[in-house]
Length: 160
Ligand SMILES: [Fe+2]
Ligand SMILES: [Fe+2]
Image 1 (cartoon, rainbow, N blue to C red):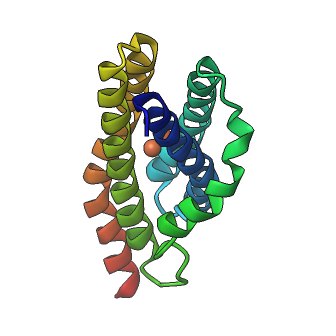
Image 2 (image 1 turned 60 degrees about the horizontal axis):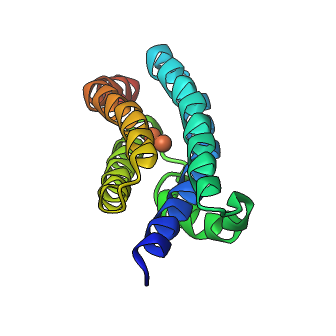
């Protein structure tokens, strides 16, 4: 595949992934009522994720691509992301946190790949957009890393 087409494919995958993540994050925010700080951070990341969708749409449009054509990819992306995020466990707070923490790293890897491809193509605008998004994802991953032990504490206390 020509380099340009590969970059477009990866950006479409990322666009589908971000769109699939919005309802997952919204649900996890609702389910985090026992931890108001986590809930607020998840709600904020819903907003950030919506912004990532818009940024990717602008990136795709610069390549003359129609972002609405990524609809078919969404089902595939959400299957991967929700694999163990829907179970009705008593330890849902921890399970959700682990899934969200892993997802942020999946996003980080995706954008590092897209950024590398954009660098090869001298596409400075896309490189910059990836860096903007990566900042949000890294910040969220850091928050989830720090909040995971607190989620564990909440579930352990509930169990007693
Ligand atoms: Fe994102
Ligand atoms: Fe994210």
